Image (cartoon, rainbow, N blue to C red; front, side, top):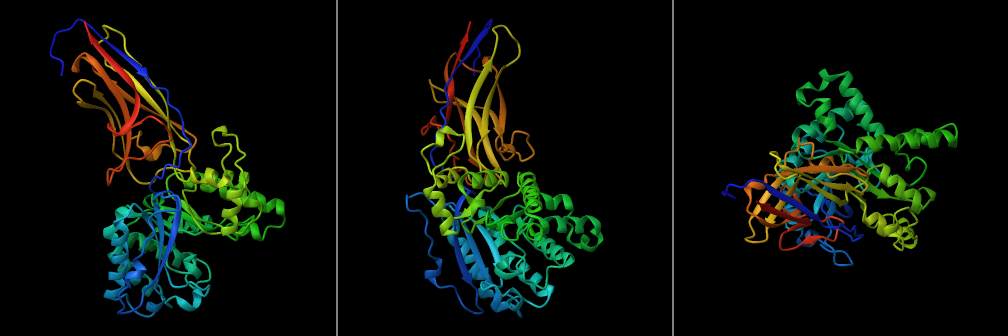
Length: 467
């Protein structure tokens, strides 16, 4: 602190020019996921070899997402036993040791025979939801989202006796009620989403025992799409497009459904599998639709033909920074959020009584948002003694400056203030950092100004002089 009586102060900023990079940032909660499948059997502990996790890809980058499928078909007529719950817990405890977040899908079928494999009654499925959640709720900090409501072939909410709107809504709300509030849920299609929300709005009395309002559900319910870019209708994801009277009408329906996701998935996750090599997943069109659907994660091996096509197709978009890269590399760098620091300003006139006021602008150039709370800090560090002063700290989810609100293709402006009379004359480094609220991990930005020692991105140098 500066105790001397001064007549006036000068505060100057020498901003650092921010250069955008095209590096692969390897950030949590987004990117290519691995698939791990576990069949749970009564009284059968999981084998150690089933616990193997491939932690890094071919280039040595840590995998940040894994889809965990738990097949419950052996329990279709009985409760999950202690072995099943312990196996779920053991798998998640194993992933907790890695850098990966997980996506959970519980299902009864891997063979396209959902009607044969799933329980006859809703009550049994609901019991399984309760019992499974008892095992995975303690690991809510590593769960990115769940997928489905247990039923249907491959757990994809088709070919099931339990998909009447009332049953589907009952299952989803029950699942929501027994899981930690921070865990996202997801249904297979936009139509499923709208039908459930409409049912809840029109018949709230049917579901009041769950104590979950439509508004609460909107903050948790997203989508997953395992037919992504596979056809005009995304292989039946947009059902009406398959039965449209004309191709023109089908295209209209696709356009409307993508627009629906563009709005919805600003606040809830969307991801899945790109399938079926066809014109809808050709390079330029694929990028446009993935961006519009706010996609944050995709299966890293499926569909192999689509993945290979992307690797062989040069990126041909407007962003010259990525010219010379493949479509695959461009998608890899834009799944989820991708933040770029742009400008830093500071305004102060000698003799003024108010604080120096500054701002930092940051742009999200990724396909989607962050969905789990993060911390943003603007701070300065004295070059003389290394003391750190926080100028802006954004931690509360309700804050208008919360990183989860930094939407794709938009610029966020973060304000900060400096009272020069609180600091000694000297030079200070101005920095910015973004970190995970749970584990403190620093999130990388697409800039070249990271200072390892200060654990932040250098915004510029501030000089304070007292006269």
